[in-house]
Length: 328
Image (tube, rainbow, N blue to C red; front, side):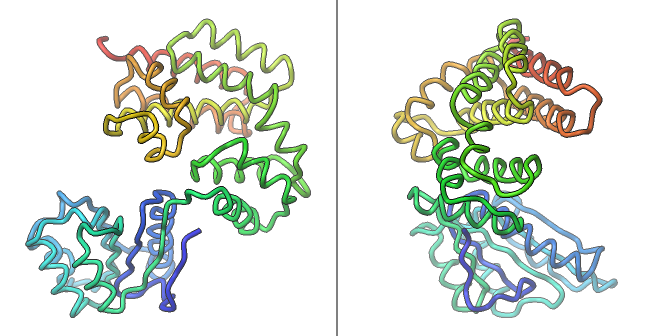
């Protein structure tokens, strides 16, 4: 869970989000943008990477407007800004513009520490977004996710979900959202078991494994068997999403030993080895197409379509096709 400083004005002139947990960093940005648009629906949002912020860029974006519009300027990976750009940001921190909120996302650590210190000295609102490496932290995160929805989940259910999903906060948050949407009343360990553990888990992930390997016929066979034995369609879309996201995460990661990549990506080492084998044939465009297919299937099985089985079959075929996109 993100931790905030005493300055909790969401529309403070400067918000500093520090850490390497992508979900929490994204939520810090979303919170500021939502507050700004609640104050002014026409708020202009600029979401920038370090290479898009050159010397003079910040001054241009924060200069007074004839229309006095509210603006949110997001700078990601601020630790990677050039020295000249850091000078610009420091100058801005000393005299921030009205109606503009600057959001700096910083990984923390030694790199770019001068900018981090300057933002803190200027009184920036700070949100801590650390990687959750301890099981107890992930368990607390899941409990908070359920509380935020106003729903009850037993301690055993929360623990079972962490055990089944692992360390990926996005997957944990997605699982909570899915359970809250699909299940009425208190969510207990038995409910989590039906969705995420045991035989159902094995069969749904078999569908995903065959699909991301490009083995469409085998994936469809596994899909039909899973549905025939009562596996929830939403569980299959969840497994497909995890499979495609794992391909995307590993393909964009730097090379290294499985143990090092496991720590960086929040996957167990055995999964790194499996995904490395599965990612042959994948391209960035293929990953994007597969994610779109999963999103469409998810909508289809949650009431957006007339035939959940067809929505899943269509997604499986699209993912298998994307897995063979290289060289076509």
